[in-house]
Image (tube, rainbow, N blue to C red; front, top):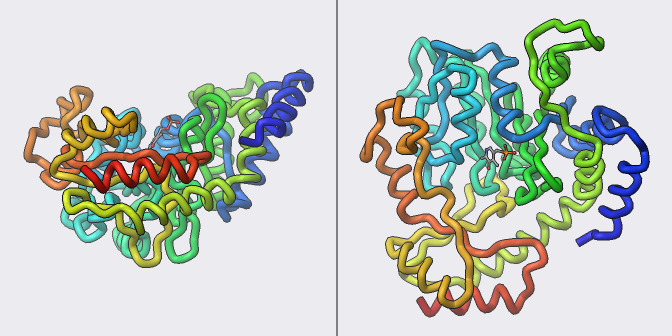
Length: 350
Ligand SMILES: *Cc1c(COP(=O)(O)O)cnc(C)c1O
């Protein structure tokens, strides 16, 4: 989709001779900040970089604890642990997002921040979380890698706390043609610190203030993201139409459909159903040529990477139950009505 616009932009950037930190990045940052309703956006190399740099800029590291939901993509957790901080897992609610009512019991005197992940594209329950962070003087970071354009009480995800972290990995709703990411913030100092950090910690060439990183969004990806951003609302609208058809036409006692929280919007990065017969369903759909994915089969606390945290099967029962029962069914821009009907019929007959 929009092939001509993408090709024209790619050629324009390639011929410009300027590939890193130029006008395309600047313009994308301005346009994305405006779209989200944040004061600043800083382009970075990936969503994971956005997360670990966010905690680094906030000064969160060794000895500090960060609250995060158990059923997230492992990158959310890596953003915390790459800084030496400890993730403290909280069980999800029925919308697959963090259960706000279970955060307070996990707070200790080492808790420094809450990382909210707007999983699958649905905005989390932000009102109580914002209150809780204010009450306990905690930093609030949002992982918006799956929630571009999603809103809670009319406000875009990414703007509720200190920093919103975005990924523009190709499969995300606002996808680039390679790796890319960004943070958004309303805080002038966080904006400056992130700009300095992403470029070797230098404000002025060869004068390095801090030990930074090379995490720059490149001109080509920024230019292509500008094209996609112009069409983002259309693309989200199309997904909403597919989701509405699924929600009204899918009907099978063995399958639970996703629900949407009052006050939240869902941007359908994934359309996730739940079933006690999940593995049979995968096999059945596969035989009919319908590809599905499990997001995610192994929760971070049970992954080998985090064995050192000492959790075991049974540590987080709801998170683990989701890992055993969730399934993402086909949901993509350009999906035809015939394709949707084929999926609906197959699932209803399962
Ligand atoms: C994709 C994703 C990330 C990581 O983004 P990358 O750009 O792939 O590094 C982080 N968190 C969540 C929830 C994601 O879906």
